[in-house]
Image 1 (cartoon, each protein chain N blue to C red):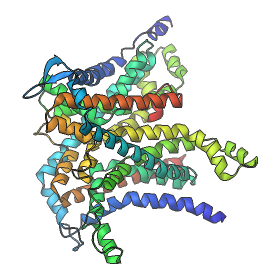
Image 2 (cartoon, helix red, strand yellow):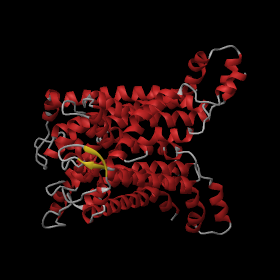
Image 3 (cartoon, rainbow over the protein chains, first blue to last red):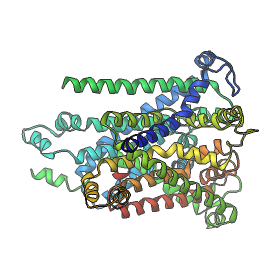
Length: 260
Length: 287
């Protein structure tokens, strides 16, 4: 009975995880399937070859990477400096302004998407990479801002004050003291923002024009048209990269711990 | 010394760029569609600057209310199922040995980094009438002809639950992890049954995580138009699909704007309720 009480919970976790990975597994298997149909016809690498020569997917992929780098990068600077600035500010409407800054992740994405469609149309800014970067930066900021804010709240302010008392300038204090201490929060927030930007469908759907497509938007239109084995191949590669990255990170952490 | 203190009272310069960005690219666009929702629809394209409540009247008609009700129903069911499935998962995971725990959390988060559409596509392959599950059931002799699983209400629900359950699990997990287990032991020592201890001690202690998870699942589930679009066929129309159609097909911008405003008030209400119940003045509990 006691053994059952120990193993049943583990079984539950394992089964739910297995169900979560089932659709991913299917995509991986079908990327090697020798037919566009839904039964197994034999092993092939054709879809990977077709993927490599598919200019449209390649272009969409690079657009997405460019967009994610630019917007999570811009948001990292704005959000980090913003969080530090806000932590030093005390004024009446601070809470309100703070809430407005994190609104993009608090409301359904489609509202912001529609707002950008209307706003950029009104301003007559041509839809494309510029509008995409603006929109993505806006929803990337909250991830970094909240992460850095939480980290700042846990910091000992006397360290910075000590630096100032010893004659460091505010800029020097920022680079030598504050930034190194909050860096983990900046990094994890930026990483999260990058992933969200890479995967965004809804806001990009409204904030881009016909000339510029991102990878999720391209996949969306392909899925609406029908069967897309090249997409399976692409997703398998992305999965492989992500798993490799995660495994490397774990190894790195483990070796660092072993050193200590 | 004095200077530092006085600079702490006003707005620090560092906050300015972010606040300006937010003002221009978040607040103003949102205010613009608020304004638009009260304007008259132009005969050809866009809006005419003339005050009217037409759009709000329009969304009170039965066709719109039906979509609204269906949307709420899907969001509610999604929240309920993610909670029922996710709570035990988070709870059991928190009780695993440390190494296993971090492995489970990693497995949970990694799919986040791949494309969410592709994972939805995986479900489409599984559920299709010539798909994996139907073929499996047919060959096992469980069914005589393919079941219709994709393009139903149920398949939309599966897609929603699948896309949003990690948020529920992670926020419940963080509150289970912070829990004070000695209280549970005390309750057990005083003779409470395992279930009684769970309901009177564990559940109240993890309530903040449950509430945060519910907000994190409910709010986005109202607006995710692509899941119902891909997995529901044309049958399951949700609020998100409706807004998109108003904008791109019907080109009725004021109605789209009015729908967005209603949706926004709804999500703000949810968050306000959360803040009141959780007694938390900031919103960090949600991340």
